[in-house]
Amino acid sequence: MRKGTIMRPFSLAIVVFASGLVGTAPCWGQEKSNDLPLVWVLSTGGTIAGAGASSTNVAEYKSGSILGEDLIKAVPEIKQYANVKVEQIVNVGSSNLTLDNLLTLANGINAIFAKDPTAAGVVVTHGTGTLEETAYFLNLTIKHERPVILVGSMRPATAISADGPLNLLNAIRTAISSEARGKGVLVVMNDEINGARDVTKTNTLRVETFRSPELGYLGYVDEDKVTFYRASTKRHTVKSEFDVSNIREFPKVEIIYTYIEPSVTMIQALHASGVKGIVFAGTGAGILSSFQKEAVNKTILSSPSESKPVLVRSSRTGNGRVIGRKEYDDLGYIPADTLNPQKSRILLMLALTRTNDLNEIRRMFSEY
Image 1 (cartoon, rainbow, N blue to C red):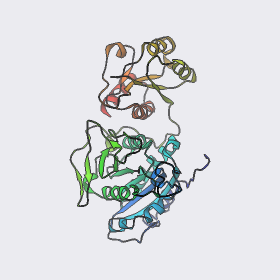
Image 2: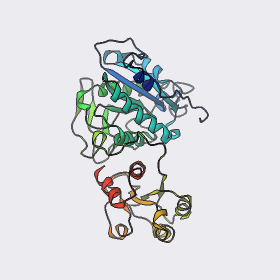
Image 3: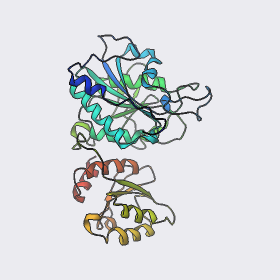
Image 4: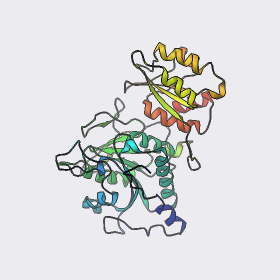
């Protein structure tokens, strides 16, 4: 366990379900009302659980300093909307999360929905740095239509005008909304609802950082109600073919950035390490430099088929599609469509748990 990590194994749900005691686990942070829907809150740390030395420390603070149950207690207005069960998964900054943590979340949420019919939805409190990656992973691996909402904040809990409390309340309101069912995993922050596939962090400090550039928000959370205006048409959750219930380790996939006269050492080193996939964050519409293309041709494409990693072309620009292009397609590169490099990595890892066939993986990048 990393230094500073607070880990309470995500076993409560499993133990409760196995013993046939679903619904009897404590509702931390509030008095239970039988008339209200039940929401599970799974806490992983991040800025929303961060603490600074003073109320003006909005950039200097320690992420993951406050437990999830204390986050709930700090928002008594939640009692008006839902009963809450809290489980602490880890308590770290989101850059320190692991793929094992993502597996724990996915399998835990699937267990909650499979075994607890009273659960209206699940809220995951999360650091903003990698929130979009976790959201997209869950979007592809949760097997139920009930809402899963990821929420974070851009200011720590101790700061003046901390945005976490209202974000958390709005996430819980969205989790119990009937309109949120079937729309995939959602991100709720700054009164806005975004879909997991399209949302990305766009600003280092501003509270309006999470956006779906070009494709837009799904809806809003306002004082009167939770409102949706559109939904993603890409495959997700109950329509996803990915199953991680028996996965213990993912195929290794890495990201390589393109820029003026890049070093090709990374390409050589990753291939030598036996990596199973490489995502290129290309310029423009997924363009690799001539240096990278030459290195791939010499190092990867000339190697035996069984040792060749799958190559995906994404873009560093942040907007727009990466489409097929003959010079790349003929060599087996797969275009990432509108998925950014970090989400392309998530999809490629999951794809490689099912197949190494390039045509099948190309289909997956088109459908998800």
